[in-house]
Image (tube, rainbow, N blue to C red; front, side, top):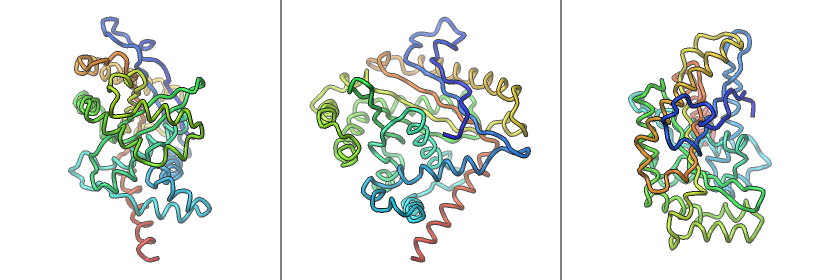
Length: 309
């Protein structure tokens, strides 16, 4: 992964408010892009998106059929995207954020893309259906954890924005929503293609069975929340420096504390809340509109190619 890690720590190690509880099973990951020639490295950021787009916008069988032709893969991936483009829609750029989250899950958390979620959401004609990211992470003891993530791209990360995310997380943790995600995992073929260990596959499917209480999987449940956000510190920086990193770290730690303080207050009444792992992932950019427009332009270009074939 091309991006630098600024913070990668458990929240209990960086929290300044000793009154907050429970604060274990919560982490903070802060990533940032580099600078070159007095500018934020936009090309590298967009390359990361397009390097990861196929695996979240195409099914496993589609990816395999196109594996020898990277250009065809990009065209097919772009063709499957149904973009949110309204300037008034807070979700503008949401598909881009989902792809970034996918790449972070793959490269940083070593996750398996059990459900390429953009593909399944786009093909169900329902942008709002379910989590933005569904992964399984295998551990060294032939065990597994389930990761149901969300990705947002905001103009800022004020307290009001953080509250919106927490509300969304709360809804995603309802029993009905969790059972629906489990059903999606067990009903697609990707899990059979990605995991070789037959016993482990059977264990995963058994754990996700609708006959099992959702309480059983909560200790295995991880909720990563990616917030791509426009950042004044990044916008006003031209060169990577220790001051930039110190200022950004201070800002992200402040936002992490505000996020988890509200998180605990709002969500701790959820059954077995203390058993669920939460991951706040922060990624600053200098200008949301410029990034989204470039992404939409590239997608439109590839869509046009598909139409002309």
